[in-house]
Length: 152
Image (cartoon, rainbow, N blue to C red; front, side, top):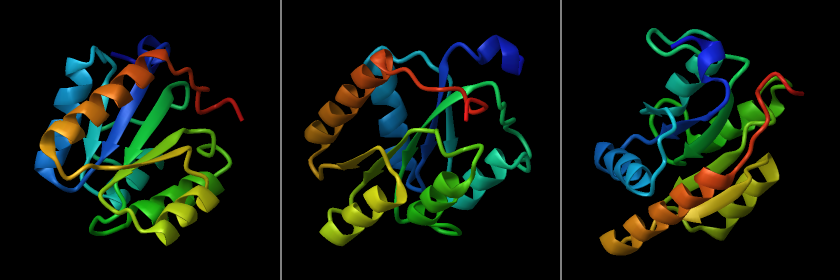
């Protein structure tokens, strides 16, 4: 599918280094009725390479709308560093970023909002609560509207 064919829907980028958490996020979004294209990245650097056109398999399309579900603690580049780079980039700064992490440290929460995240959600430890949280995120995604990346 070309960039132009996909531009009407939001592409969800899940940036999560834990395979189990990533699978759970994607499965629960699908169970909530989210049919959007979902791309999973394992760390911030891989995601940054995607945005800069350097990723070996995934193609970034400037005409698309994206929503980023971003973990904080990851190898190679943390979620906060990726968030900072995105919000400082004139082309990418309009991409909505939802921090989805186990970290509930008030300083890190404030830092993420200071850097420009749109929402900060702490992953519940309990499996059922985590699944319910993800279903709610999925319902939110079904109604959200975002700007295309090139609308800055």
